[in-house]
Length: 509
Image (cartoon, rainbow, N blue to C red; front, side, top):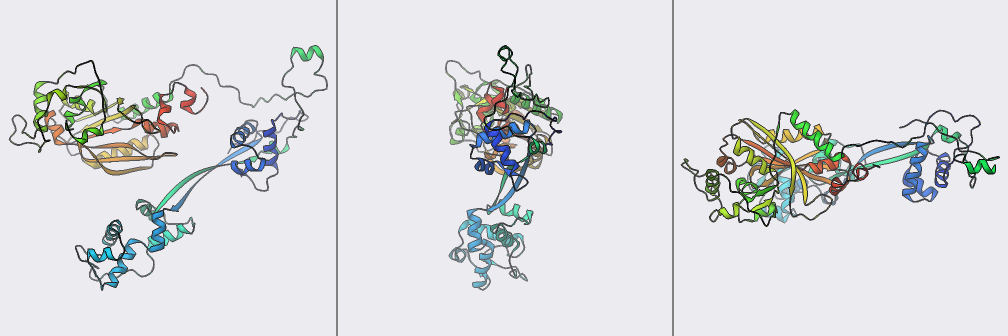
């Protein structure tokens, strides 16, 4: 919280304030509480919110008002949680059904007990993890286990949240949030008060006008006599003049690159104009299959694509058709229905993913170990909104060496999130045609909520085999534009393409 500056000069003329500034300062002086939030203050003086916000900032710059920000997190019941409070948690209702049935419950009887499929699944999982429910069907308690007496810890916390209590067990809240029974709401409140100087300062009478400067006209006419001048405040902020400065988004991308270089990664590049072969085929995306629509690439007319090396084309065709690679005795997998079409492979497209850079890199350097990344633009047929753009940056990356598994990939995502100051990260299973297993990582945006930014997985054998790679390879395509939105405080991905630095930084250029 900023402190007010020293005493006003003795005998100085009153500081000139606009009408809204005067009204707000007077209201702050008359407060019966130590401070007040902007919304309540606006109602008190009957001024629009934008005018209140701007006038308060000007009062603060004149050392007449103090700002204190309060950050608060509250826990609320979701509709699903309210239902659980009213009807009981699924595990409690499941135990009650077991008791009514003499300790044994068939799947049909569980359904008749009023538990839908989702609730039955949740109840069975909870009870088995706690060692109360035996494996297999019909459902029954484990020998020696008895139904718990009194409320379950989750029931207690749900009731506390419903009553608005704040002293609740955070670990249980985390578990209930994962089950969709509660949600955390983060709010920030600005509270204002008059500074000591603001309380002592004599207010200019309404309608009185102070002179801001001594002009030739005032000297010529003598009208300056008997008038009061606005005092010169040497503490007031002056316009900040600067020369050329980097685009904030480009500078952020360069910082992200430095983080990856510091972790031992080599940077690579690839062409924006690609062929279907490098954009899709070499990644084992079928040539005629709904999975191809995951990356809705933009085709290019009036040019022809260059085919890859004949031996690589033959190996990729073999895995697509479910045949063994040249020199191998068995196929890597069943492949895709229908013959592989070389004409499709040669079609030119605008690159829809930087994974094409990884494919080219592995084809040229299949010998491990390797760590590579590429931050570059891609193009897709997207509907423009706050999170999507037809042109976007992606951070591609791969790590290849013996002994890697999915835990290492989650570790990479966690390390990168921590390095840029994002400590809320969620990971869940996902699907991509060229990785198995696959995951998605989400970070929280203050306004847009959870956004998917860390997709990745382990490249499939059908991708690595034709490229001559024989070690596990972790691969990802990070949504760096969405990460930049969080880091730069932007609420729309289209802002990152602005030439106006004032829009991009949220201030004036």
